Image (cartoon, rainbow, N blue to C red; front, side, top):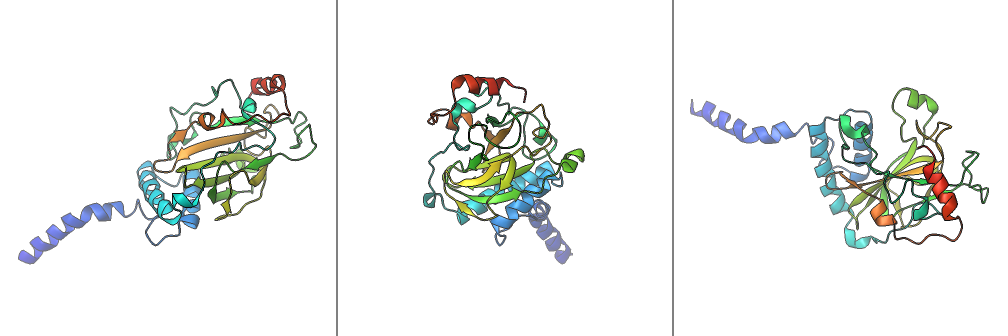
Length: 263
């Protein structure tokens, strides 16, 4: 009888740990946070993670990444993520295209709202080349960071099956900012998983990949989203980008026309 009571008491003590085990199955102290976070991101993308499990993994990965990549080793200087462009090419006016109220990283609400800023480029004929230079538009790292996920296999067929909204994309973790940056609608991805990138370095070229970006009615643009690493809640990129210098090329009049086109 005493043995049964001791066993039952031990079970009660261990229950919270055992109950949490499935939620933390994808994240553990021995896990590699580089490869592991990409696997987590893929499971979220494929709706293979419940909101409860997702929140537990987000907290776990945040701790793992902070230990693996100490903030003092990385710079926090912000760079405009589209080479040759500036704040005036951000869609809408004064960042008004940002709508994050209904968004959540995991679960049904991850497809709601627009927790990002779209940065439009001069590509009237939609050939993925800058109309001013005839060259691809380089996408730059927002700040020093580590590449934690990439995808470069988008096809229009993926969108037909409901899993290609962002097209080709890159996720970067910025230790000094404690943020993730997400760059979508890319053409060629030029970084790989685990790469350490400097702020302002080239990570990709801009394209028209993704369900809506591929459509002819959509002007060529970068979709930039920022999320807090600790809980994956959105941060408005406009607050970090609005005071950066505007390159001399490209007039305000042209930028307003781009911003006013349907997204």
